Amino acid sequence: MANTIKDILLDLLKTVGPSGSEERVINLFGQSIAPYVTEVKTDVTGNCIAHKTGSGSKVMLVAHADEVGLMIHYIDERGFLYFKEIGGVDTSLLPGQKISIEGINGSVIGVIGKKPIHLQDKTDSPRTINPEDLWIDIGAKDKKDAEQKVHIGQVATIISEPVLLSDKIVASKSLDDRIGLAILIAVAEKLGQTNADVYFVASAQEELGSVGAQTVTERILPDVGIAIDVTHATDYPTMSVVKDGDIKLGAGVVIAVGPNMHKSVSDKLLNVARKSNIPYQMEALPKRTGTDARAIQVAGTGAAAGLLSIPCRYMHTPNEVVSIADAESAVHLIIEYLRLYNN
Ligand SMILES: [Zn+2]
Image 1 (tube, rainbow, N blue to C red):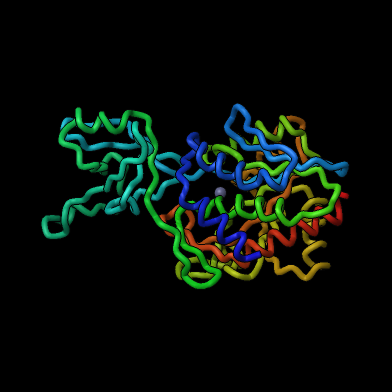
Image 2: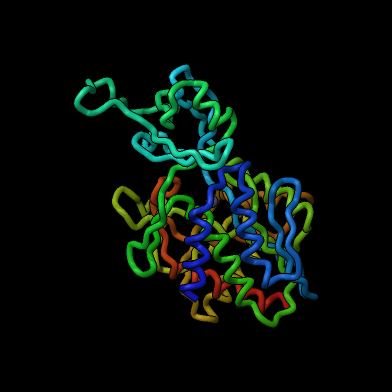
């Protein structure tokens, strides 16, 4: 199981897909899951819907395809590119990064520059840094040269090659939520004989307010919709278990409870985990989840929502860290849930 998730995941992590420009991720997801489902299609919002038909109740599993990123909005006379941020970007981490822009004729590599330490005075390293203080250098001669390669509105992400910190611990950008997509593909592959009627959805624009999850829920009208996303691990310096709960890497999939999640769904997931001895952790979410589970709950006339999360350190940085073991427990849990409750 580990190899499957790891292999799929590494491919997904190398794919660029800021919110609104998820096509590459959607295509890879569709191709990867196609052998295990009845049909794969995309919708007008940009979601990918992979349907495995069955006679059981309708279950929708959703992981989001998009990631945070940058959008080029101004090119100056010297050919430097200025950008706005897509989603919750930590601006302070951008200086010094390599950037991949989806340019006019394919990928354009750039770097986000900064005045050297030797030449800085105290005011050059402000506590808060804004996107307008930063620029991307693509090695262009001037504005005209830059405009041959990139136009206004094109998107970019940080370049951060995935690495294994140990056998099961991965560091990369966009593990939020490519780990969720890898879980969906692994579930589809291993599901085997069951009557569950399952929709595996790679949703678009979660980082901008679960746009895709809302439209896809209204289209499919599932009985149950479960979002699979990441949540904040609290097992590293500066985090507080008293404030944010005790969530550890490698301690199992996280089952969320709270008003966004339907009690019957959370209860069944907990029941399955206990019965099948699947490692799990619990997360109390008394407010909006900020995930696709919220959109699933309120779309149309509403669906019974659930939320499963993978603990993630350093979310929305160039090096998010998750454990493959937690993804494996999520796959195991979803399969047992479908076998027990949706035949
Ligand atoms: Zn996410």
